[in-house]
Amino acid sequence: MSKLIPDGIRAADYMRNVHRVSPAATDTLEDVLKPEYWVHVAPKLRVGDKLEIFPEGGAWYAEALVVACSNIHVKLHILNKAQINEPTVAVKDAPKAPFVVEFKGPQRRWSVIRSKDKTYVKEGFDDRGTAEAWLQVNSKDLG
Image (cartoon, rainbow, N blue to C red; front, side):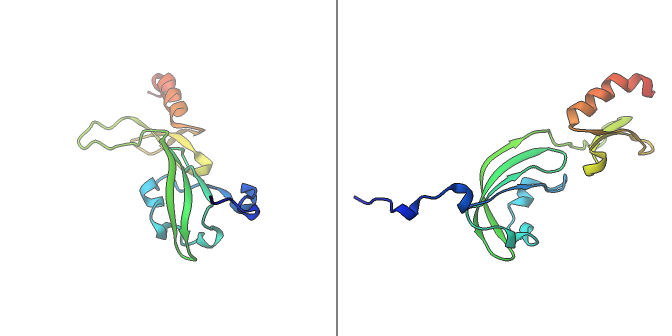
């Protein structure tokens, strides 16, 4: 019977790193899974590292394990994934809403925008649901 040798067990923190990854709000999980996506940060990673991937805007979340890497690519295995916010889908020929809720980056975050002139009505919400709730409550006052 085979037995584990003393060097076969170590503290996980010593053997691997856990990284928080913040892709752009427009990046999808499919984008992140492409090995070339990681070209600028690949040297920082090593096999066995765990990635907590949470894009700006919080549309989705994934946990991944680095299974292969070089100086220019990273291959991941997805351990867990969840869709947090439903993606916005444009419907062709649908009537245009007077206001839209969109994620506008780390400064403006989730924002309520008037459709006709792209004016920011309110910005800085932490999530889509809060921005949509604010719009629903204040839509009569906005005209």
